[in-house]
Length: 349
Image (cartoon, rainbow, N blue to C red):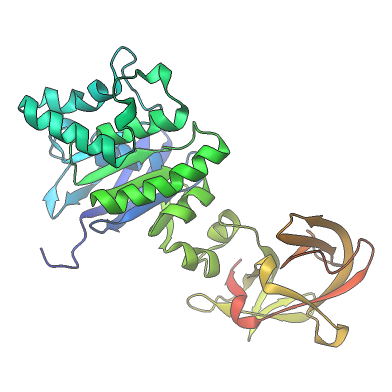
């Protein structure tokens, strides 16, 4: 295998449950030591794909390769892959260290090696002082760390995480996002996380596959997904955006007789098109420099940033303008909006 070969290659994987198509010809490459996220709404196929990789689901067609070797021919327990469940699935009657050691004991490893590896991983996840406690004596974040320790102590080449932070409150979840990223770098294992939370995926992943209706819509870095969405689905799902629907035209999209400027992400669309502009990429200008004008219908101030909602005649939803600091305009004011054409994306409608 050369240096650029992927660790995991998913090729043309499909899976249907009766009339419901969960996976529709999915192909993906995941690199060694990458933190990779499968992101999408409920029912998009991301958990089914995770279960196919783990061996708990058999696809109807396609191939899954690990370093070029067929994974589908191996039962789950023979794959160098570990799946950390959403529920954590800890044994309530066992201590933290016993929970972590369980998988190694099942493999029949020498007691001294088990003791050493458990001590090492307890240090890595910061739970050495809690080794003798049971799960019901731990916080949600601590239980999550135990489940993670139990998964990485077996030193899998690939760790799969199914909505790993969904049971945690917002503050702990933010802390654990940083912790997961740190651990992934420290232990040198490829992580694949399934989540419907875009903030979670954007903060942790090196690359993200956005899934919808059983298909991969786009695979990219968080920054490229946000700044250069490839489809309207991705633009809708990732972040907040202003969308102007019209007809593809030279230099942008023709909306209500005016060409609003922007650039296509790939080949220029023809016919129905949509112009996508992020609220923070808009600016308030004088009337002569404006692309659209309207009346402020709402303002929101969040401390660090503020958002102004502007009702533009002929446009269905308010146009949002976000800026650092306090709002620039009050409710009822007439304002004029512009943007840099290089930061506006033209997509097929």
